[in-house]
Image 1 (cartoon, rainbow, N blue to C red):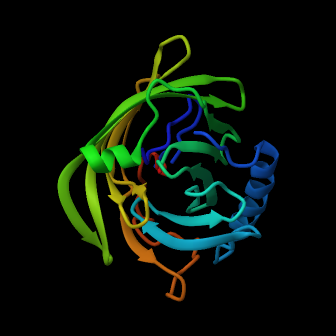
Image 2: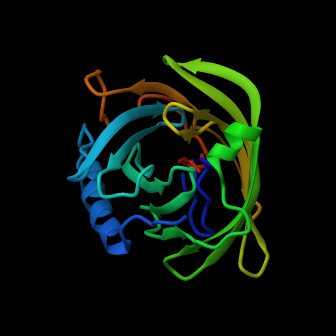
Length: 255
């Protein structure tokens, strides 16, 4: 489930259990350091001590994503940091099933965490094996909101190659409700998955929120840069930055 659930107060990136990443304090310390680097116009992302940057992905909608792993995390966990024109805007962690474990929106300061109990957690392995994954789970934000997320991912059967990476196209639908059952956010569209990298990447989607505002975005990946290649770790977005786009930031997500 690469598209991360969006909170009622701020859109978040693609999504995602047992085994949460270190707590809020650790996340805030990490976020503070990365945000300072982003605002200072740092050209290159350096992951925290004990972590390894694996790939930098330039996306449409004027964003660039850093995907990294940390030795202290449970096996299969992946972290990401997403940058736009103005620097860092989102941090996220997913587990091996691409379940969204924890994330922070830099704009709102809100942290969202996965509630461990769920009617149906997202399952990357289930999607790969059966071609469809339905999910029904809750998250809790640092301001006390409990949000209910329901939807599905479907493999369309279409395979594409983007900058040397073999990706499979998905279709998804996601509805986020308040604890009282009010529909807050709806999202639908298509994304991509990589079996090799074990995660989702953004695509073309539409959405609406509780105010009636509608959004359209294209967060598709364009360039994949690996260690030793030019642009690895770059925090400067390259694509669509001359366009004024209404976007739903990524990472499931997303993701």
